[in-house]
Each structure stands twice: as C-alpha cells, then as structure tokens.
Length: 143
Image 1 (cartoon, rainbow, N blue to C red):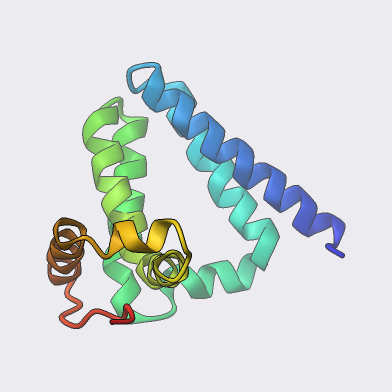
Image 2: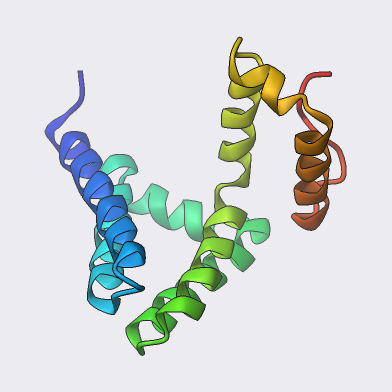
C-alpha cells in the first residue's frame, strides 16, 4: 500500500506532532518544540519527497509569507522564545495549509453530527471572520 519511505514519513510526522503537543503541554519546553519541528518537517519530506517539499514551501508567491513565518517561528523557538515562536509558527502553518483546512472543513460540514454544529450562526460568523482575516473573501462552504 505505502512504500517504506512513506511509512517512515508518516511515523516521523506523527512523532513530530506528538512532540509539539508535549512541548506546549509542558509549558513551551524549547527542546520538545524543536524536536517536534524537525521531525514534522522531516516527515513531510519523506512523505512527499524533497523536491516536492521545496516546491510546496517556495513554489508559489502566495505561500512565501507562510514559509517565512514558519521559519521565523522555528528560529524564535531555537533562541528560546517559545511562546512567541509557536504563535508565529502556527500563523505560518495556517497560511501554508489553508486550502487543506478548507477541504477538511468542507468534509465536516456535510457530516451528519458535526455539520449542524458548524451551521450554527455563531460558528458561521467565526468562519467568516477567519476567512476575512486570511484574505479569502468568499466562503467555499456549501450553503
């Protein structure tokens, strides 16, 4: 089903997310956050390949801002400013993966249990605010 490289990449990515989560839980421990960042990026590289990773991070001008923010956040974590670094990094990840989040949100919107919750006026208003803040003026969610 998956090649060995992809299996290793999935494992590295999962361990990266676990270490990032533990780093946040343990009051922004710099060592855990750094290890999580390195494992996450290494896992992505193993899953999609080196050149596709470079193309993903630097391929289109609309992703440059997300890449710069992710790298800046990584550097801030390395110089022991973990709270500010993780905030900057999360913004960079959000800017890099916003189209992926839209697909997940669209899938959740049509599921039987979560869909009605997402259709609540308060949640829809929050979604419109987030789409406005990220520069996306129109919602891609079904009506």
